[in-house]
Amino acid sequence: MYNLLISGGIAVVVFALLMLLAGTGMWWLWLLIGLALFAGSFLLLSRLIAKKLESIMEPAMKDIQAQRFELGVRRLQEALKYGRWQIYVTGQINASIGMVYYAKRDFATAFPYLEKGFFKNWVSMGMLAVSYMKRNKRDRMKETFEKAVLGSPKESLLWALYAYCLCECNETGRAKEILEKGLKKLPGDEKLKQNLELLNEGKKMKMKVYGDVWLQFHLESLGTIQKQQMAAMGGMKRRMIRK
Image (cartoon, rainbow, N blue to C red):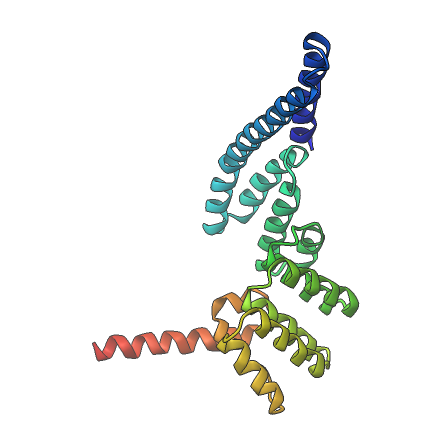
């Protein structure tokens, strides 16, 4: 990464000059000065890059929220040039682009971006794992979920999604184990408890408890989603009539 190289270069040059001009008697002090310069320059460059990224990301997110998807994606792709400067930037942007296409159900276009995404973005990792499942690559699905829960162990839906996909692969026993592991990370999580109880009773998991966030993974049929939306609208109408 350029910021590391530049910061390291500054530190090495200053240290070498001090050793040459001031002598080696206080080499430890010159080393401390070099390390301080490294940290300071690295922090400064990181902030500069962060500001440049923010100037691109904010309008890109606004475009995506306004459903100007292609414009938003083009803006995000512009930010990829800063991946050479800042660590994890490329992965984070690829994850964001992949999530946009996945949300549009353009799974084929989303897939390569999700594969290059950031492992701590648990939503994009979940989408990637689901994509592997749909491609009958169960080992890759499990590897992806394992990496995701390692990076984001406090996300209840992630553990539930992992278990749900295992159930879809006819691995209910393993799904129970995953829910139990999730409960160790999130003691007292009612949603995980409820789904574990359902599996122990031989019933299907209920993912609707996670609301609209669950729907973004597109594991419910369009018909089911429409029924849920109609039911929600009906509930709103009844509440309005009562008022």
